[in-house]
Amino acid sequence: MEQATAQTREMPRIGEPAPPFEAVTTHGTLKLEDFKGSWLILFSHPADFTPVCTTEFIAFAEIYPELQKRGVELLGLSVDSVSSHIAWVRNCEEKTGVRIPFPVIADLNKEVATAYGMIHPGQSKTETVRCVFIIDPNQKIRTILYYPLTTGRNMDEIVRIIDALQTTDKNGVATPANWRPGDKVVVPPPNTQEMAEERLKQGYECTDWYLCKKKL
Amino acid sequence: MACISPDGKPTGSGIKILRVLKSGLASAEEIARATGLPPFRVRSGLREFAEAGLAVETVNAYEITDKGRTLTQ
Image (cartoon, rainbow over all chains, first blue to last red; front, side, top):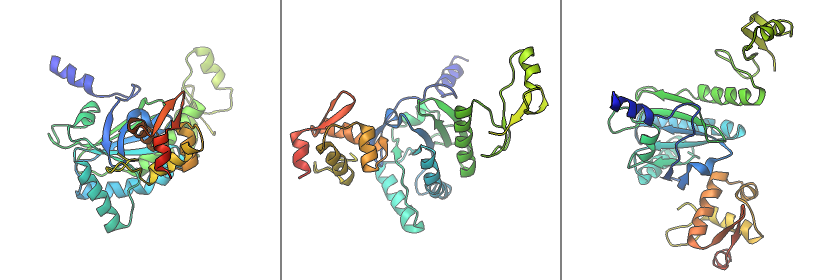
């Protein structure tokens, strides 16, 4: 029980400060604080020169321009060496014509992977699973996604989450299931009976007092 | 090292940063805007330059040293 609690504590959680790190990457030594003021997607992959990871790296590179428009940086990670990363990103460009523009952490000692709970021994004791940590400009964790080794990530969903988080921050609203930019957003639920009654008179599209939507 | 090669010379990104510093004190954000490099790359590069004695950190900004100035010539 004690051991389980200790392991739970090691796992980062949404709303908490992102664990700080200093790591060797394909773009030199980087610290988490270097990304302060930008959104950051820190993502791990199991290993270089593997098929699913290669499709993901190409896909991450393809959404990078869209992410940049939204003030988002990408940072990859695996437990491979920086030489392996360099060889792999060069190979990706050579074979597919897609340049990998973002840095990749060479986490040989698994320091960052451990701090972020990226190794799930039930899947692999040596490789990181496919994690995505969305970290806001104040370096707080806003979203965590875990995918198994066999399932490549969905880039549309990652961009959609960024859009949803930024819309929430800007407008103080929530976003409903399958929301896309331009769709109606959810007005935060009222906290008092009076607010609930007033809400119904405010011209929102309300299914009931607790579920009201509006156009931005 | 991203901005200093193993032979001690600045890389292409490093030269861009040093050239901005050569024209005066600048913050990481100002250098990022002037060079088009992402702010994280600039912060990391400035840290390398400070460690190598090519730049010094002042209040919220960096200044090129004589050693750094020599490398941009």
